[in-house]
Image (cartoon, rainbow, N blue to C red; front, side, top):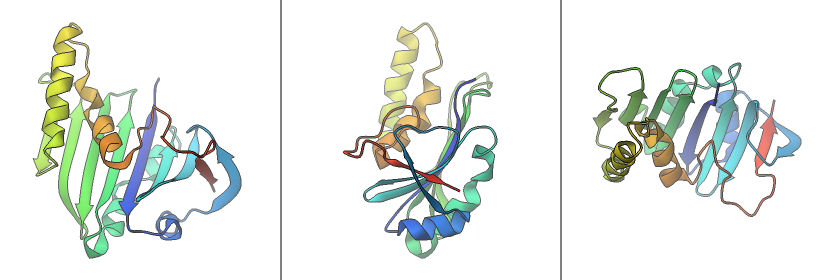
Amino acid sequence: MGFRVSWVASQGIAADEILRAADRQRTKKRDEILDLGWYLLELPPWVLILADGRDSYRDLGRTYAKNLSAGGRETLFFRCSDTFMKTDLRCYRDGQEAWSIIYKSDEETKEPTINGEPPQLVHEILERLRAKQVEDDGADHIYELTAEMGLTLTGFRHDTDPETDDPRPFVVLK
């Protein structure tokens, strides 16, 4: 089964603004790990809103990232479905896609589609993952590219614990 998660991350934004955009509110509950549902995570300078699970991840789409990127604010959108081995990471500025990485494991090429001009680090991570894939008899490590890039940019990766002093960093949303 695996993860089905999407998140939007933005810099220079108040958490309340990102919550308004998604029509979500904080609860008093905090979790130590990402579980099914909606969450807020603050990893300065980034603020992330996350939707985990089959019933939630589709509801947090690219439109939120586009809208939050107004005024030149860099906003990232990440989505993955381990079930279908499809993932994408997109960067928006001024309501337009600045760059994106899209990967579908079911394609024969096993190569990501890279649009725009992402940070050079994307290509470095991709080369490292290609080498790992060769060493591991073709296991699909390139699928990790978007998650690795998201971690590098924001400090968050959906399948690892975030580096924070807060033992319960995920604010449960309703």
